[in-house]
Image 1 (cartoon, helix red, strand yellow):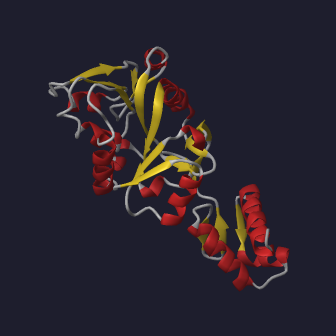
Image 2 (cartoon, rainbow, N blue to C red):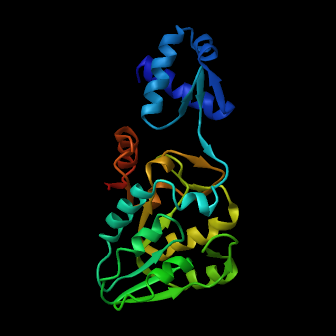
Image 3 (cartoon, one colour):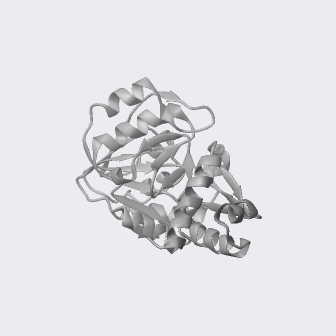
Length: 253
């Protein structure tokens, strides 16, 4: 490993340990000019491993998922493209899970013409979207309705998911990282997503570019549990290469 590569590795470790580090402090630690540290940080940020701020770097963490009313309109065009591309992975006759979410709803909107398809979902909005699709059977998991959303969760939801086996699961998530995998800020949703992942032969994560290389408090699944990532064309190529290096298929919509 070159001296620069070793320094970059140590910078990442320092920032992850301390949650923040200034350019001047890092320059002092490594005995180099601040300009050298700024170049290092630019490369680290391009690779999607840290977020740079004025005068230093932080590792970006998602501490709370925005309210449904905000999420439903955010990155709408990107989510629509992601939904169309993800729906293109669904074959007639399959059994699939569609996780609750504003991006996954767009998948359902492109499934109306499928034949002999079974969709299991914990989202009443997704179920309603498919209610008139003649070739689609919909199974709603049941569960407790989260106030202000269409999401069902809890013991009844999890009981259904414990007992199903599907070809594909489409997972919505606020944070997905090429090293740390799928994470979530709210522990109450972790088990439901883990059961969806366990039930599927193929796990497909749908996430727009704002959710990539982000971390949150609770681990849902390691990166190697993800077979395919469907994202939008604004995602930085350097970040996508890191997912590909972890054997994740990447589809840009």
